Amino acid sequence: MIQMIRISDGKATFCRRYIKTYKYMMERDLGYPIIPSFLSSFNGVMASLARVAVTAARVVAGEFTPVVNGYGTSNISVAVIAGKLYALGESDLPYEIKVTADGDLVTLGRCDFGGGGVAAGEEFLGMTAHPKVDPGTGEAFAFRYHVAAPHLTFFRIDSEGRKQADVAIRAVKTATVVHDFAVTENYAVFNEGQMVITPAEILRGRRPVRVDGGKIPRIGVIEKYARDESGMWWVDAPGVNISHAVNAWEEDGGDTVVMVVTNYTTVEMVFDRLDMGQTTLEEIRINTKTKKIRRRPLSDRVLDLAVINPAFVGKKNRYVYAPIIETPMKIVGLVKVDISLSSDDSVVGTRMYEPGCTGGEPFFVANNPAGNEDDGFLITYVYDEISQESTFLVMDAKSPNLEIVAAVKIPSRVPNGIHGFFVNEDCLSKM
Ligand SMILES: [Fe+2]
Image (cartoon, rainbow, N blue to C red; front, side):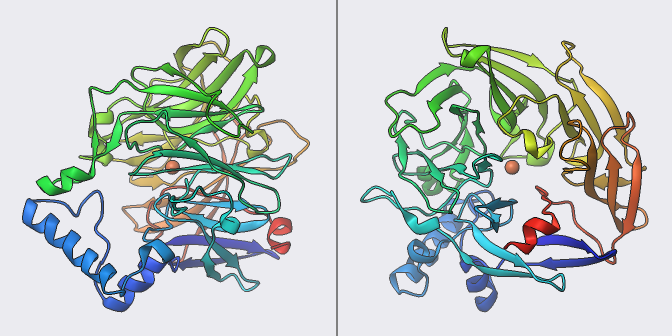
């Protein structure tokens, strides 16, 4: 479900809509879930096998066609790719959506971007919810991960919205959950972490996703326009299980790739108690000559869902805005981090929400595109558990206390979601 506010002509219109994925439409019409959840549907051998058997029977009977129509959700993030607006969830392809003139949100349909360049015998069934769109060229870089080999596939969508040929990354030998990646001027950077997929676990009555504590995480670097993985190289990165790649860029003439990421410090909790998981913000410097990495914490607070001024995607930037997370999984405030500082705690601004209030992911909206990097606003939803009211909050990104410049009461509760997005009127009008 997407919660949306359209601000136009001095008027704010609130709207919430389910994205009408094939899974949603099937399950809505049947009145019960048909697709087992990887996280919660496999508890006990008999129950797990029964769920798999029922789904398989529907596929065989032709009542359910996941290979043709997909089987996932579209509830992780929103992005503009080649001038069109998409809802994304990594378990399925993106769904194109449209904001209407009267502030409604409609699902237009599932999109495979022309479906080009998929190797024979492989399927294009899912795509990361975190594609990286180059603000200069309009190209989008993306990937998908699979249970079957190749377990990781990198690809590009050109500025006209046409998918280009897949680059199968066969060096990843284990089916691994890869939620995000980074892109710089010349490279794409992946983290093969410890969150793995083992379908055989279902036969034991357990969920197929788990954490392999014995696996050594690593970072892989591939040229952005590579046609195959032959030039890709990997470096071991113990302790690196990236939740989100906030930004990345190159320094020293390309000899250093700098990544700013949120990293799981308690990865073993991810599937058992996601709400108790902890992530911190850190800088990872990758020397492309010596193939070594160096890590530096940017704060000792629990932070995730961090954002930057989107004009700096793939370029060196200075400021990161990161929600402060209190367990169990409550965003209680926001910090501004200056990554140009050499300190281990580079927080330069803080906004704590009122007691009982929890926020969502913020989004940076530039005030003046030609202005300083932090000349803009941070927008988010905040829910007050005491008054049970939600507010749309606008904060000044420049001010040290991230001063609130506008707070608009929402007519109904907005539950804390995952990722947020902003599209300006000019961009919307061209869709
Ligand atoms: Fe995410």
